[in-house]
Amino acid sequence: MVDKKVAHEPKVEVDALDRTAGFWEKYKSLIIGISAAVILVAGGWLIYKKMFQEPKEERAAEAIGKAQEYFATEKYEQALQGDGQNKGFLYMIKNYDGTKSGNLAHLYAGMSYLKLGEFNKAVTHLRDFDTDSKQIQMIAYGRLADAYSELGKKQDAVDYYKKAGKYFQEDEINASEFLFRAGYLLETLGKNKEAVEVYKEIKEKFPRTEKGFSIDKYIYRLSVEKNDFSVK
Image (tube, rainbow, N blue to C red; front, side, top):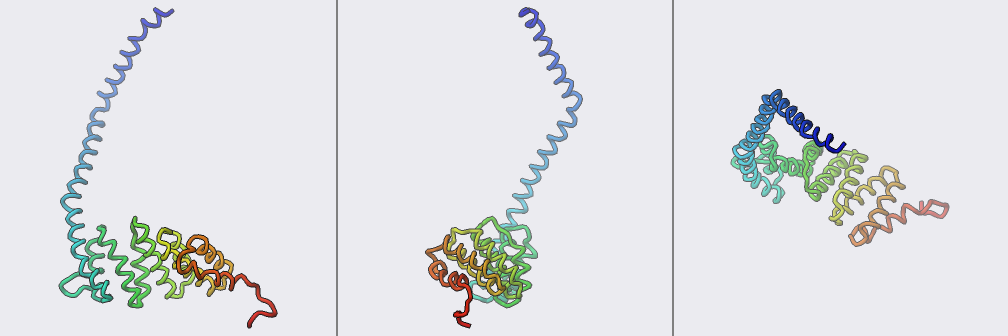
């Protein structure tokens, strides 16, 4: 029985080899074509990156510098529009779309419009901004909430203040501030129970911050039930 089994093994191996060779002969043109296409795409992306994308990123990084200086000195109109020689954030957004600096220009433009009182434009640009940096994204969410609040869209503002406050809790000062603003707006909406929950979250997670030290009085004020002896 053992000898019989061994005698058949070489035939099985040959058959498998024959099938493999047959498969290659049948599909070699397709396999070569797919391989060539992959190489072509990879090579094309590398050429695009080196010849176009990277130089564009460098030009964008240089161009945004003056606008950032204007923003830092609170010259928001010049930061947005430029000064005739240097480009502003709006030019960056239009001409450097797809670059890191073009994306960053949305954040600066949104905050500039917020300072200028043009809240709808602030919302537009802040919503278009996106980054992998959690701390910067947290600030963007908070400023978006500010814009919604100024527009009287309090529930939208609450939602984004909460989102900001939970997004990067390692920044305890800003996180607690944004959560506090959410709680305060909830009070103005008559949602005291939700406001207390937010205030308690501040007390639990950020006890060593300025808002954490003072939050007990807000919790107490909303937790005390009204009665005949309450001050009217």
